[in-house]
Image 1 (cartoon, helix red, strand yellow):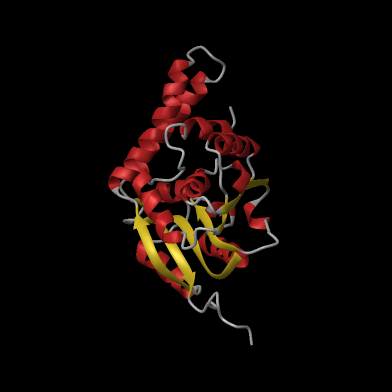
Image 2 (cartoon, helix red, strand yellow; image 1 turned 90 degrees about the vertical axis):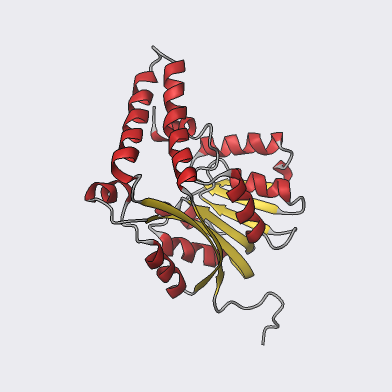
Length: 253
């Protein structure tokens, strides 16, 4: 069983692959989408759950999702057809950091995928290159709520605290206009769903070729979360506008 298969099973009960509840996702999208006919891009879309929910709420919107996982994109296509939004969703199998589109977007998302770009600021640079005047970026990133152990840093990378994360964003030419910091309930619910979904699959397939591996991975993940990073890891979603952006209706000199 490869990493992609494990991730699919682990997210079965939590299709938003980030520590956010349904109400938080809805509120973020309400703040991020300012036009009913918005063009939206998700860089690192996975199963495209953000886009599927956005398209259902905005019947005139159109969306593009980009991901390297062919299996995730196939699931997204099937889900789009079942929700009757497939005609307004285009999906591309490509590296998100290398993707370019012929037209700019009113909203660019990248939630929990900054590792694919090499960090938060490279993610914002990629989003800026795709953004229409007056557009917004919705980015989700981890941060340290308190000083991490060296083991936590090894697992999750060189994150900053929340204030330093915001300083980086503002220093890069962005102004936060809305945000959501995941609650303890959301963080715990995500981790329990991740390890629990994978463990349940393993128990339902006892004796199968992958059941032992799945249970081992679920157990290890749960133990690492509880003993290593639960006490120090946080997650924030930021809605950003460019500080010196050109207004949408500004005339070009």
